[in-house]
Length: 70
Length: 327
Image (cartoon, rainbow over all chains, first blue to last red):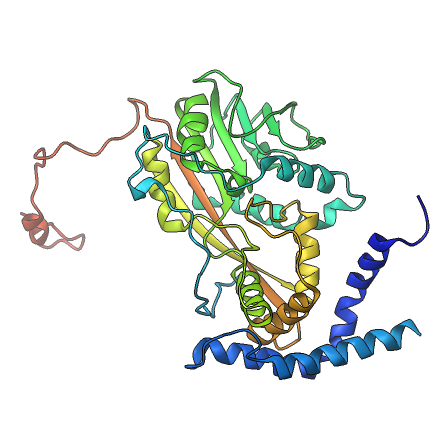
């Protein structure tokens, strides 16, 4: 049993998760604030209530991932 | 890192507390035994964790609990307990300063190394293969929160195998443990997927613990709470450590997959809602310590009603040490 398979690849992705996230700290903070606001405000937490912020975070994250693999 | 969990975020649908028998089910009800955890899966997780190369790096929580046991808050008179049962032994080594011989009920393959003569038995804590009135002391460190039917284990297993005037000392994760993780996952999953499923175990609330022990017919109860906060770089490191400790989720109702987007969202929410100024995130482990004694005639009992010989009214007349008038 050797070489790269789906398990080793996905584990590798998971390992890089923290460092990639660190590069998107701002977008993460914006998204986090949006979600946190729903716990206090009158606005209920529904699906995609912070979709815009999440898209920004996800874009940043995938870009960071692409950059690293080069 | 020992400070009380300060900020409490209201997170609705807060983990349904595993309530004690107060909800009307008496010891004889026997209707539908509680089956929350997949014990077979827990055994596999523990076995996996036990053979990890540098598994000892995940032992910090157990070390903390060991210190907690050793502290004077316990007030158990130092006496020797000839025969000790250590439930969910493995790497927990608290009984060492109390006894000369330990019998360990282990879930996992590797018993722990110890200077004291130890015998390990592979058994399930919910079905102890011992006669009643066998042990002077039963200890359990950080394993009771994986028990399915806690009331039954306390009364029919632990209480049963203890000798009269024997004592049970336990530490388990309770109430608010990992509330930050639970809330972050819940919020992130709701926002991303429109609903959420439980990812963190239900825990016993500290307020229920006294009831549980009392119903199991333990006397002279002591319950103590210690909030241990551990700081991690982020949610992933926390979850990796939990896995390394053998404390991964094994509830039947768990979802085996966590969507990638939800993970990302949860990481962001965790950091934003609970993060420390230096970028790390805290995780709370609320450790509940308990002591209970199996009844014995030698133990102090509350006085009989109506047997009082003095009245509170006489308090005012109690003579003071600096020589005031006596009654």
